[in-house]
Length: 175
Image (tube, rainbow, N blue to C red; front, side):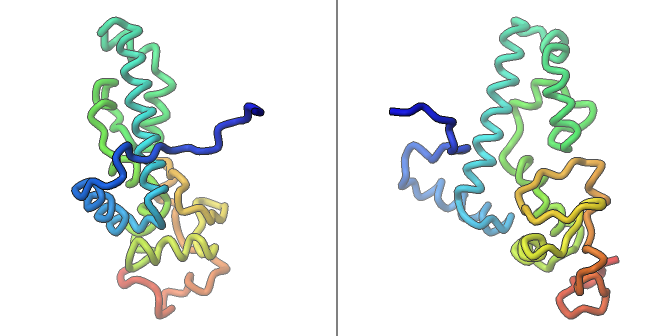
């Protein structure tokens, strides 16, 4: 059998039929406007990787938090740049992250929080249809992670009909 690159970037739950987990997943899917559970599982796998890396760094430094932070400086800087960790957070706080911390940094959620759509689902549609830009570039991937500095630069594309404040689909209060 040929060995190729793994193309699956998430793990499915070990037990497929757990009512409580299914209810929690359905709540997150609705709250963040995710298309399917794969998007949620992908975020959970990303969080799992972050925690695994933090545990590895703490273990490598034999529990010395300062040494672990020096070893994982690039790792922590990346999490801070994306706004997943606060600027003054240390490496032990990575272990306390929740999947919602990852989902909050998606372009779809950031756009919804900025009032680009009435609902997360509508924000997703505006992004997929090419009505949203981040800085100068149009982005059509709702799953794109938005850096903290880019957050203020998420807006409607100037060429989009939705850029007109009087457009009927525009959310009230949009600047």
